[in-house]
Structures are given as structure tokens and as C-alpha cells.
Image (cartoon, rainbow, N blue to C red; front, top):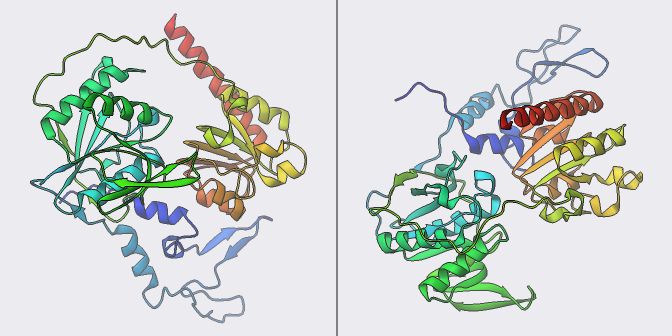
Length: 406
């Protein structure tokens, strides 16, 4: 066994999610901390704590009854490894991989593939080009096929369809699963279906036995049909894999992939005003709350980062931001890949609205607020100073990139 200490992503997720039933068990025990007035506070429920009058306090944390040992054991538990040495069949998944990483839609898709694979089948993920993802194993991937090459860079649907045809000929999967999304999966799935001369099931949100249910009639009706070989699934089609880890063994194509003459030329990305992007579709949101005192600096930082602006309900009610910029259960539910919360304490309605965001960054003065607990990265300090330093860092980075290009 290796002596390397490995992270447990599931335990870290539980520790961040204060609504999870095991959240309290994952929190470290604090024996003392500094209060807002600089006074050192002591934990009156700590083990062996003696009060100012020499009286030993009663421990109600459960640590004396083995609570601390249970907490430590829970953090160190490894998810059971699911292995498929000789797959009876394959369920192929083509994730969008926006930004080189699995999105929440991709993880839902892998969860659906895991259901279809059962115990005898294997989930094969097909990824185009370079990626930055390191959590394929905990997402439910048994086999990983990376199709590398510059021909897959940018918008290259024809070359990708040819690659999928080669994978189909070699592995002959029972089902193909692609996200029915605007990030490329929806178009690629329909092109691939036309190439195979098969009729796909689109906007699928549920599978029951040999039947699938998809949205129809502008999302107002459900359409049930026999389960086809090619499935384009909608968001929340299944629960992501969270109870097992998988091998994610790399596989390769047995034959070289020939390059096709593209009929489509990719001219690169088109610059879009971040303020014109709807909140529900924004990938990068820079959100401000009651802790923001300099809103001009806030807008300047959002423009420097190229982010879509958002706000908490307090900031909207105070008139600093428009109502359509409000994030939360009483505003807009967002699914951004990066969500930066500046001066937002983290009310339950706001946390509900950002529950589907991949990465949350919190800038706040209070290290004990709920937004800090939810965040993947926290910066404790005055927001104005941090935003000024952030603008300076962005300008330094861009000037360095221009010099390197010259």
C-alpha cells in the first residue's frame, strides 16, 4: 500500500454542504477561536474544558463517547472500487467537457450510463483532445478513450463524427449517450445519428426498463418511446455517481483514425458582452452582496474578468443591481462553472440558487459565514482591497501574454 495521503472528494463535498445529514460530523472541533472584538473564545463543549470557576463543563458534542473517532474514520473512508474485468457490453458516453472538465450535465449523463450498464457492463467515456479532468473514477467511468489531435480543436463536428464511427465499429456499444445541450453535445449527437442512419431519442429525462421519456411540445409534454441505441439526455436525467469509484482504465483505438477534409472552417470564438448573457446560461458569474461598499470598483472588476454580474437579494432591494440580476431561490437559479460571491453571507435561498455551480469562490470578512462554508476557495479580507489586487493581477497577466505573443 502507498503511504501517500489521498483526498476524499466525497468527504470534502459533505463538509461543504451544510444541508447534508453528515455535515456536522465532518466539521473539525475548535477548542478556541478569536471573536469579532479580539477576545479569545473557548468551546464550552470541548473535552476536559475547565470553566473560569474551576468547574468542568459537560461535554455534549459526543466526542467522549467516540464521536471524534467516528468523525476521523468517516473522513478517511475510501469509496468502494467497482471493477469490470471483462465487460459483457459497453455504454458509451460523449461528455461535453466544457473547459476541459466534466460539467454537472456530464455527471448526470454518466450516472444514467451507470444505471444502464448495471454490474456486467462498462461505461466508456469518449473525450476529444486534451482535458483537465482528474475525477473520472469518482464520476463512474470504467474505461476512458481520449481521441487526441489538433483536428479535434475548436468546432470540428465532421471529424468528431468520424472518430465516433471508428469507436462504434471497434466497441459496438449497446447504447450511446450524449448531452442534449447547447455546448456541442446536441448537435454532435444528431449528426452522429444521421451518420448511423438511426433515430435518436432527444431531451430524455427518464429511462424505465425498455422505455425512455423525453420532453416534447416546447417542454410542456412528455413523450414515451422504446429505448433506442442513441440517447440525447437532458439535465438531471439521473443522479450522479457518488457512492462508488471506478477504474477509468485507458483504452485506445485499434486502427489509426483517418483525417477527413473539413467542409466547415472554425474562425474562433466571437466576443460577447457578458452583461447580455442570461443569468441562467452564464458560465462565469461575479456576484455582489451587502458587503460590497464600492460598486463602481465591483463593476470595474467584473469587466476586467469578463464575467456576468449577479447580486444577492439585499443588493437588489437596496437598488444597486437590477432585479433580473438577482441570484437565488427567489431570483434566478444559476449553473455557472465559476461563481464568485463578494460580500455575500450566504442565506439559504441564495445557497439554493447556486447549488448547481461547479466552483464557488467567496470573498468575505466573516470566516464563519455560510458562504465560506459552501465555497471551494475562500478569501478573507476587505473586498475593496481584494478587488483592486485582482484587477492588477489580471492586467499583469494580460500584459505578459501580449509580450509573449509579440
